[in-house]
Structure formats: C-alpha cells, structure tokens
Image (tube, rainbow, N blue to C red; front, side):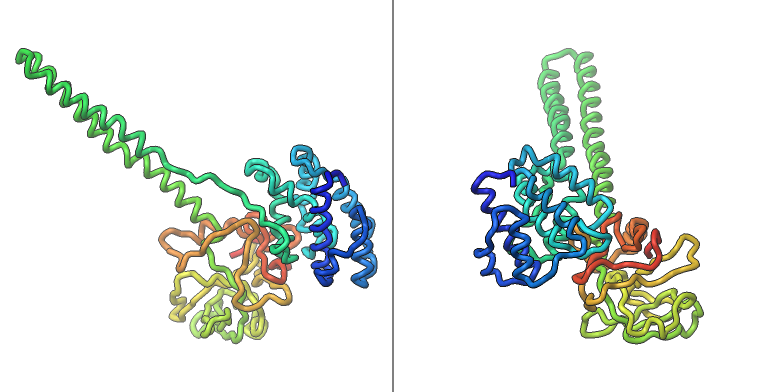
Amino acid sequence: MATNGTSDLKRKQGIVSSLCKHFSLDPAFSSQVPGNDIKALYINILKSSGKESPQNNDEVMKWIAFADSFPSDSKACHGGLNELNTDLAKKSVLLGNGFTPSEADVIVFSVIHSSMIALSTPEKEKLPHVMRWMDYIQNSEDLGALFEKILLEKPVFEPQIAKAAAKPEVTSIAKGTVQNTKITDKPDTEKNAKKSDSADAKKKAKGDKEAVPEKKAPEKEASDKDKELSVSLLNIQVGLIRKAWKHPSADSLLVEEIDVGEAKVRQVVSGLAKYCSPEDLTNRRVVLITNVKPGKLRDVMSEGLVLCASNEDHTKVEPLLLPEGAKPGECISFSGIDGKPEDVLNPKKKQLEKITPNLFTDEKGVATFKGIPFMTSAGPCTSSIPKASIK
C-alpha cells in the first residue's frame, strides 16, 4: 500500500473494522487480524467469517490491487479517483449489475475515504459518481460510526443588489443638497437652471429607487424555481394497500385504502382501473406521495398519489415495485439530496408538474430522479418497464 506509517495503520484499522462489520464479526476481533497488505487482511477475515471465496473472486482481487496501490498523498490520488468515477458512471456498486455492496466496495471505500475528505468542494464536484457511491455504501453498510460523512460545502449566497442600489441614491440626494446650497448666491436665471438640474437629479434618484425591486425580482424568481424543482419537496413514502375497490361513478378509477404507518389509513383514488384489478392491488406495497393537497376525484376524497411507471404510449402502466423488506411509512431517499418536504404542496405553484418530468426509470428499470435511484432501507424501487416516465 502506497502510504506512510501512520496513514498505513489508520487504513488497516479502517479496512479491518469495516470488513468485520460487513461479515458480521465481533468488532473486538479487528485488533487481532494478522497481515501487512490488504490481500492478506481480506483472506484472514474471510476465513474467520467461515465464508467461502466469492465466485467473482478475480474481480474482488482486481479491486484489492487498486486499493493496495492507491496513494495516501491527496495530490497524487486524482488519477485513481478519476478512474473510479468513470467506472461507477453506469453502476451502483463495484461488482455485478445489482445494488448489494460486496467486500470490494467496503475495502475501496475504506481506502479512499481520507483522500475524499481532504478534497476541496470543486474537486469533489468533479467526482459525482464517486460521491454518490460513497454515500450509498456508507448508508447500506451502516459505516457512520466508523467514517465521517463526506459533504459538499456550498458557499452561502448573499445578494448584493440592495447594497449596490443604495450608493447612487445617496449620491443623487447629496448632489441635490449641495446644489440647493449654492443656488442662494446666484442670479435668477442661474437659479432656474440649477432648479432644473436639481429636479432632474431628483427624478433620477426616484428612478433609481424604482429600479431596485425590478432587479431583485428575477433573482428571487430564479431561486424559487430551483427550489421547486428539487425532489426533496415531495414526501414520498412506502405504502401498503389494505383494500381496493372500483370507483362508484368512474370506470377508469380505483379507490384504495393505504397504510403508511399512520394511525389511520389514507384513502387514495388512482387511474389504474384499465391496468390493475382491485384484487391485484390488495396487499401490494406501493410508492406514494403523501403531501399532495387532499381533494375529491368524482366526489370521492383522495389523500395521496400512487407513483406509477408508464411506457411512451401509455399502453403499459404499473405501480412502482418495492424491494422485499421495505416497510410501510418509511420515506424514500435520494443520495446526495437533502431537504425538508413541504407540509402540503401548493397546486398554484405547480411544484409537482415541474418535478415529475425528472422522474423516470433507467435502462435497468430502476426508478430515479434525474438518474438518482429511489432508495428504501431494503434497496431501490424498480419497475418492469425500463426507460419509463413516472407519474
């Protein structure tokens, strides 16, 4: 491993502790693992866990070699991090096409963590796939107690328009005051000329004052727009349909009672009658937006929106699929996106209409927001329809 003595020891401790956690070994065992290189550490821990070498052992060894040669110097690590970022562009974990982290993920995470912490925000922004992957591995493997979370620190924006506008206003008024003082010693004709100048100055000052809010408005509008486009505004939860039946007065609608972990089930009206029967939906887990404004659809109250995937011509529509183990009431998360959802979405702002165009399934059928998976505690939400829109 390309490190000095101190960082070598820290890396070894980090690798051993995270591998012990990955293989569900006693943490006390981590201080007794022999071996000077990563390969020896891995083999000894694998034997102690009682597990056999994985079928893709050659791939594991490839990533162990990558970790072993990874430099500790933050200035020398960029090449390796760029290589890793390219490799992660089209997958969620290092090995295979799934979403379950392997020992390779745990080892590489442990090795590069300190280098990622040392990077500046602009440098981290150039490694979006590594940042997404590290957040996913830390959460999936529950490594929060072992490793500091890597964050992007954005500078706080302070508007400067109001300060810039204040200067011409003060200057104009002061100029008018000086002119008025000098007028008293001048002939009438010059007085009139000065008055005219003063009037013009006042008009200009007034114009400057009126111009200030006009400059502020576009900036505020742009800021609001950015906020509305964030999926964090939506409260998206796992729901379990307890009961479903046909809408009494609309053939295209179904009514469902959905458990989202609250004291009372939610009644939701969905346009799924053409694609699902009530029996198909009963006891099925679904993905539900729970902070839409409640309202009646054909005289029946609806308190949520079931998210469904649809192909381009809408001949195939299905509710999003949830992984085994996802629990009713848990919130869907998006790696790298934080923020508090609105209590209730405002229909006048058309927030939902601006967000849903960025909801789609990828080529593997994984539900995403701008390519970032819908994640539950048990894994990502999916659909049998790849490259579908989600509404």
